Length: 186
Image (tube, rainbow, N blue to C red; front, side):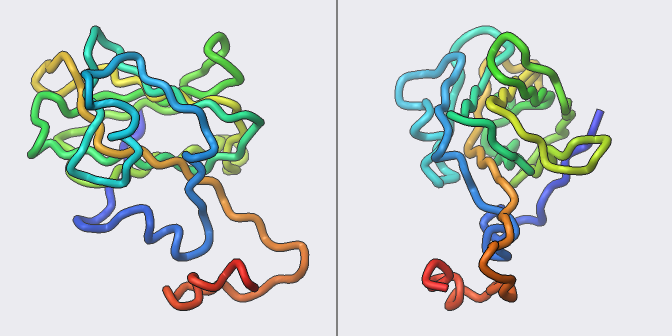
């Protein structure tokens, strides 16, 4: 089992985006949940607010399905969990599965989390080639919660792809906020 890398307190995946090496592609996918309580569904999971959350409503495993319209290269998943706020609702064991559809998903990572607090970065690199995976679908399955909790809370999930180099020419990476504002003009 892999241990996820946790960012330092206060750090978030948007810092990675500012380096220009990855880009968030969750908006390009169709998201679905195995269950949710009214008012605690997909909108809260993707709203960029760490105070809101998805709350499942049913038996385990609790599933988050992320489906892309075409084969997509994915480098990393980032999940925000907060044990201090959610206690028994906090996931303790997660499985990440990839495939073309629901019928051929294969587990590529299984994580044990001990009282997580902050962003958890889950690398989706191929073990043999060390290249990002290419897939139509990602499924995140919550297999167990802390304190044997039944339902789960997830506050945010982000999906990242590597940024391709421009075929026009190689420019130095712009990392300051001022440069990032105008990067599409370049």
